[in-house]
Length: 496
Image (cartoon, rainbow, N blue to C red; front, side):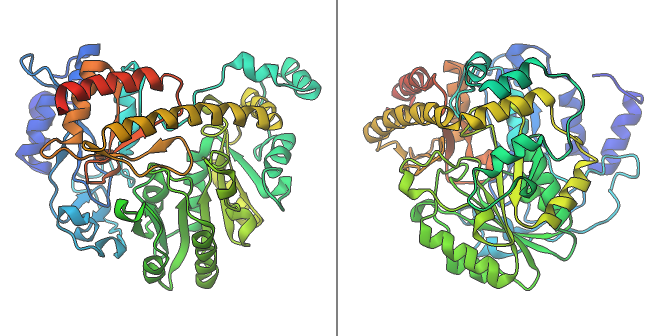
């Protein structure tokens, strides 16, 4: 590791600012070996299962006599300081000692100078634990049995779906800048996914992540309040926190089928509530609200005068088409829908996402923020997304076929292993959130052994900051039969 200052001075600074424990971590970090075996032997250490996920993931190299990788949680005090965000004991999950209603308490931000001075890292948003996990593991393993997407479409298959107009656009494409709002034809095609929207009700982004980032910063500021379902995609609540807004996590629970509790959510509303965020089909559980619950959410948002952000990236992958819900953007004036080409449309490499809403003032504010992020999308990606959306019946049929085949295999597996795993069967999407139920066996430990022994990666719930020995399992990839067979062999050897 190259040092910007002499080692003795660096150690003195670390010790003075953060204490001896931090100094020990810093010393160990300099000993990490940069090779592929080190990646698989690393321990991913993250925060205690709790309502907050934002801890810096630390990687500790294990000795040569310790052959198994471990992914463990670091015990945390009731209150901790991460950059400028104060974390409260009210976020500790019930199974870790917090009360059942602890998640109803908002998380407040305290803005102050960093304890390590002006030259230190003053980033005001927590590390994205899940993405740090994937950065470490995703391309170092053979089978990603926790992937959230559907098997990516080959370029040749996408181009074969082009009509005359889009084929001419592709063949005559020049690699110049694109319109900051998105290509007009692309926005028109996205608008066609909704009942009552026009092209001007759509703003295109470089993936859903940029859309979330811009929207949270456009809508929220200190003194505002947001409610977000949890466990969930970390940026849906962490970016909101970074604005200085108070965030309440609406915990979904396995014993209620991961359902949204409307009465509890009503109790979480405050006069400052400006944004309610829901996701269905849900990541990571596969939960999909029923129509009555969704209508109740819309009514609560309207009653509170709040925006309703509906994360619909898995829309069109409902297992029963009858269960498909109206979009957020179609349901109320302050409704906002989040969409992307990455999940149901199986084109994550395009990095094309969008916000859809009839509130054009919101889109205008997001557009001004986008001027500071990507400015505009990739020209080839926009044309390929347009091809895919115009041929969406064929694209979605392919995705549904993969998911349906795989979920049937998983049904058999969880029936046969009901004494070792519990499984609330998803109602849509390409992911679920099973639980390892063997007493004394940690999913972090077990999944670490699985990836090292069989090259199959699961995503422990600790990466969502969630307890209960759950793990995310993806069933959108075509290698699931092979990966599931390897997992079952490992389970036979270690759980029976």
